[in-house]
Image (cartoon, rainbow, N blue to C red; front, side):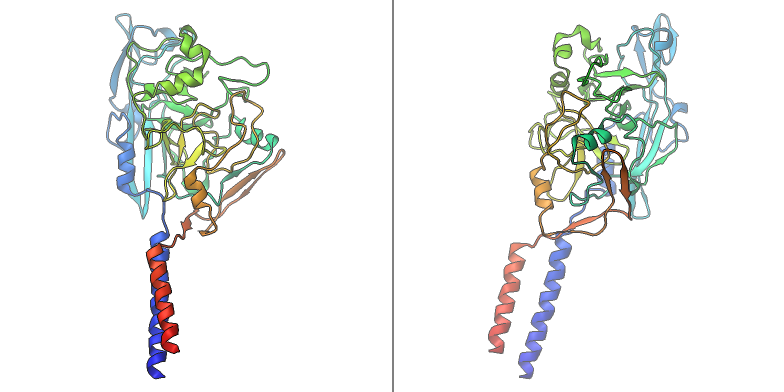
Length: 410
């Protein structure tokens, strides 16, 4: 009898130990260690190691443009040409146990943009720090909208990128840009997807006209900030002959969203094209398997793209093109009223579906629910979801031990 009791105690102990091991093995988190951050940082066209005191005071890379003059020259006019400097620093470092990424850019590209001579094109001081690739959960969306009105209130709002979530620990050190959504790998600003009229700048609903951009799919706003609303291959490679006006190129003017995707023809795998102000990576239009992302994104244009729960934004053909809000978001069967080129519904990626199964335990939440008239924020500490997926071999071993224990008792 004594040996039976001892054996059963040992079996019970083993069961608890193995269950603990199973839980620990299955508690996957995002790839956000220092090496991961440095790998992403290496994709940026940096000109100086950082952090630096002020990016505008550093020496950058000269860009000489014969097409820019007057207010459209952000540098100096030398011998009939505009000469400006592209300046960019991206740094990764530890703060306690958290990896931070700091982005410092003067907002000027390494190529010569095309714009009307009357446009203002000016150097900026973009400088912010944020938690790199923070852990998020498909089961705890930060944004949720279930009606056309609610979704439009959330996504058709030029100020929708003003406040990164608290879990990102965003700190601004430079000038204040309430419409900044992220920074491209070439240092150019990625702005909130909307125009000043709070509509899609390329496929506006109603009677609004589409905005003009160059063939790098960028333009300047009133303060002189040259920026993207849509993914552009120019961020990865110099335009061979310099950009021209999109309106003068039939393939661009006739279908700008298709033109944008085609600009990534040399980058048909998982390709870093920027970082969002919430710390999540922005990728081009393709997954690691070379498949264009046409589904699987949430309302923010973010997607869970692997089995351990990494979440990122992707360049797509559909509004909001890069990012429309700070995700993760939900997956409603409704569309927005500010674009004629928006998805009619949203569906989870296969990875998001797997992560949202009944075996997922969410430790904390940080959600925003948007109704047609109000926005309610439920805040908590850092969001970290833990997926509890049993390894089949461990499960079989547990069952075997239990059966042996029962047999011994008999």
